[in-house]
Length: 168
Image (cartoon, rainbow, N blue to C red; front, side, top):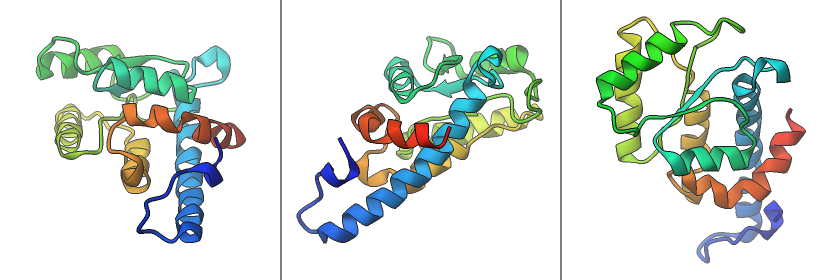
């Protein structure tokens, strides 16, 4: 599927919608490419930076988008304190490869996901751990018309994947 093939809402001007979609998808693809690079294993010239998502379907969506590295699930049957402690103990306060944030946090960008993103940020920052939220912010700004969840990205993988590859 190409951007030109995207269905547009009946109340929108088709030309403006497609131009707007192309611009939004292009912006998101650049941030996706950078996050995929950071997430990739060291032997694939990445930083081995894990991505934290809410659950299994979110992980599957990211795999469809090209993520090859570690993806941690927040909803694993542990309480929040245990997950935060696990992230801190496992990944520390700085990525040893690129000296950037040790974890990419990507919750849904709906109301519940936003609250969870904020809670995780605050709790990790209280341990002096900065997190990489660039992908979350980009998706929140650019992908709201297409959906508000990570798993909803699967429907757009065929459009986004070539754009992501162009930015790799």
